[in-house]
Structure formats: structure tokens, C-alpha cells
Image 1 (cartoon, rainbow, N blue to C red):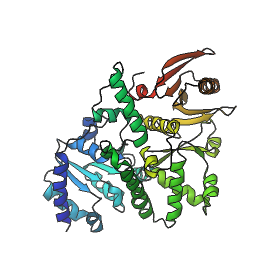
Image 2: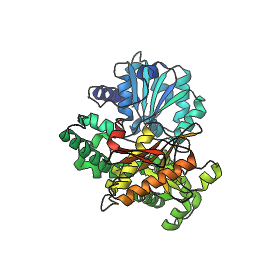
Image 3: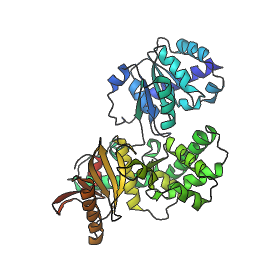
Image 4: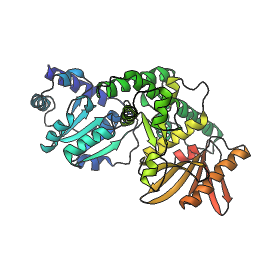
Length: 420
């Protein structure tokens, strides 16, 4: 039975390798990654392209392949028999790709054994902190984590072969069209060219994560509470929240259970929680957080918005781009409220220094709106001792000087493409 499954997956691997894939943008150097003996742990949400990235790493290499989305593989798992069959089906393999391994109970122990045998491992998992903690415990730091998310705006343009030429009115119009499309429908690779299926695809994917990656894995009994919580967070993306507020509004039974569910939703990459910046950790932990969704297409899929909230959609895609660029919540990325309660969307920090304040506003054509955004940046600049001030808009560009400070107003598409 096991050998039959592995033979089928041998054919699956060969079929996958014949396809043309969009080259994913990554800061990692491919050959350096493969040459290292550490475990390559590729994490990210389901269907974001983790397996494709792994195949791109290994395309010209001799590698074995196991996909643990195949139930027959882990239901009859025998580690010694599996390894024997791998050697028979993939003779002299140099690398072993283990796909969606979180489905295998106690997988980290087996990975640890393979690592000690000297197997060069590439592992994909649809979970964040929990799984990286498990493998960190087993491998004591002998791994590198690569995070893979749905397409960013630059990747989407590259995939659609849209020319980046903002001096041409026609090509700029195409870029803006795809920016609106990206904000609304998101960047999951399989539906970038199939927008008519966006809602059904993403609704099914969202529910699948709740069912397979949370309810089954963590043996959640209060499934209605989990679903209600996830829907509440999705409806309130980009807004502040506290766990006590959620418990009260949804009439949930337990603060501790709600905290646990929030953590599950974060670890499976559905949601991110952004803390309010404060130099005192205790005050930071007590303050409300803001919630962001990994892909704005989920908002459309769940149909919470009768009309598009373009401001929140724009803020969410900016947040995810900052995450793609390597910022981490609780470490280098925060939001902020000034002493006069003016909000700054993103505070970027490196080491112990604030490096940039970013405000996001879809439309600043109204003088009152522009004044509000500029006032918040100036006030926060003084309180946080940072003079690198950016205001991201949909398509407005200008330089503003006020109170001795320079504020860069940048169209978000230029910022996404690093053209500012």
C-alpha cells in the first residue's frame, strides 16, 4: 500500500515539474539555500505557493517527494518502510521534499531523525509559530524558515506580464486596473487568471483551513465559536480589538478559549495582529491590537462588505507588503496613537530605532483629509523622534514640507514596485 502511494507521488512529482510556474520573489539565494545542510522550512497559508517555490528550488535536482495531503500516506505511516521505498522509487536522491507535513502526527520527531541521518530536507507547512517552535525544539536552531504568501502586487504584474511604464497613459491605466483588482480579489496564484471563481474558491479555502488545520489538528469542540470568531475578525479587518471586546460582542464563553482560537487563526496565517507601539512592553501588551487578513480576497469571498471600503483594503495590502519585506509584528512593525489620540498606521523599527512612519489614505483630495493625515505624522514624528515620513495614497504624488519636516506622498503602486 505505502509503496503504491509513493509510486503515485513519483508520477505526481514528474507531472508538476513539467508545468511552467511564475517565478516567486524571494530574498533567499537558491543555491546557498540548497547547499546548506539545515532544514529548509517553507511556511505560509494553504495554496499560497509553498510547494511551487520548493519545486523551483529543486527543478534541476535529483529529489524525492512525499505529499502528506494524501491520507493513505500518513494513516499507514511506517518510517523505516517509507525510507526504504523512497530509496527504491527515487534512487540516489540528493534532497527530500516533504509537502504539507503538518498532517503527519509527531512529524517533527521524524524530521529530526532524517536530519541526523544527513538527509537534505525541504519541508512545507501551513502553520507559523507552533510548527516552527516544534521543529526548533527538535533541531535546536538547525533550520531556516522561508515565508511564502500569496502574490504581492509586483508579482501579480509580473505574472500578468503587465509592463511597468507609468509614463505611458495606457500602461499606467493597466497598472491601476490591476491594483484595484489586487486590492479586491487578492493574490492567491490559482485564481489570478480566473477571477470569476474568486468568491467560491476563497470561501472554500477559508473554511478548509478552519476545518483541516485548526478544528481537526487541535481537536476543537466549540466549532461554532471558532467560525463566529473568524467571521468577526474578517468583518473587522484593519480595526482595533481586544479579546474582552470579542467575548462580549459574540457572547463567547471564555476569554482563555477566545485567546487560544485567535492564536490558532494567526498560526495558520489567516490573520495577523498588530500591536500598538510603546516603549514599555506591559503597556503594549495591554493595548488594543489591530487585525489584518492575509489576503483581501477573503473579504470579498465572505461578502461582508456590501460596498468596497477602499481605505481599509489599501491599508491591508500595504500591511501584507511590509510583512513580505521582512517586518515582524511585536518586533519591527507596530501601529501608534499619539498623546492626542491621532493614529499612525505603521511604525517601522530596526533594532531600537524607529526608521519610518507610514500613513495610508486612499484619497487625500479633500483638504480636511490631507490635513488630518499630515497632522498625525507631524505629531508622531515629534513623539517618536523619526523624520522619515511617508503618506501612501492610491495615485497621488507630491512632496510636502511643514514645520520643518518633509513628508513624501507616494502612490502605493510606486511603493509596491520600489519606484519612489
